[in-house]
Length: 526
Image (cartoon, rainbow, N blue to C red; front, side, top):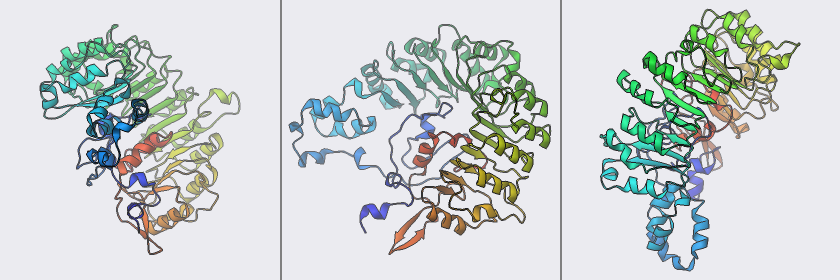
């Protein structure tokens, strides 16, 4: 057996067999910081999507990131013209340029310093790189070329009030600025960010300002001169803001299209009568919203995505008003409270015959309705009539679902690409619909998640996966079914030995994976 065959993890592509340290910026508008999607630590891969974490495993450094001095022994590097090398280099990742090509020879080292090669970069600020000025020199070199920038300060770097000195006078082409790893933004740094990045459209400050004192500093961000082209904002701990700062944020004269609140109990939407972005906002993400804030959501008439992490204060009357959000394609509800009845939810999912195009759920494609006992057979039937082309569905923890309802979902939603039915099998239910899955059912399914369902044996899912190798199946957290061929026999692995972090990041860029639930995630802690 060849080395490549030995490393193959079926049914995965070979690229997932070892850990690849190359980072990339997510396509998702509500993505977490780049540092969490692509950790730096060699010995620990951690993937965050809200509460999810991937277990430890040893990192294998790709050959492309090792020193390439041996290349000189294979061919004469000087024979390759500069124009050819530049054409090749522009397709390489910054990590490969810095840790690979720069080691070959002085000529290559010189060529990889072309600023145009660095359009999407992550910069790690350590005490050493700050003191010797290497970070500052690099940012000065690429200041006119970078479009997406993530700045990470290591735990060893303490003087945040001096961090502003690493930035050049202006980086005019940066449209995405990721500071999601910062827990503080000193006033001097905020002033520098405002002047240095005039054309930022996406700003991630998800973990900034965990204390009230730090929150007050943010008020200097929400002024007319700051980030005039801002369209997407990811921010956290809004509930810890004082009223003045919260009002400044929600009254900020920006044509926001995406607004993501992380780690916030209530964004205090109700305290602002008119928000400048009420007509432009297309995506709103809240982890927990109070009933008094839900009513404010009615004012956002052009929402395409509405994600509410915890809906325990929602009532039937709220659902009636949300029916007017007819443009919704993504809807995430979790943990509906007692104020929502089974009849109310079924009515919410019903599409009227008259003026259907102006009612929810006419455009719905991606739905998370998890840990909500109101989702019963009647609601399932209404959903199937209204949304036969649904592409993603998460009904994890919906205790009212029985075998009949699951059979209806599996048989009728033929365009599903993501399905989470974790924690729905209790008592005597056997998930017969899944065990007897016909060849023409769920033909396009990309990921099937079936956590905490003891009534279905993992061997049954293994047999299904062998029949459907294009389908990823997760019977438990931190694991995807995988196997190898040994002497002509299929041998299943008890663990996922490849780069699970990379698998998730690839899925994360696909429409619909956003519906995977926090409580039963592929990788997570309860």
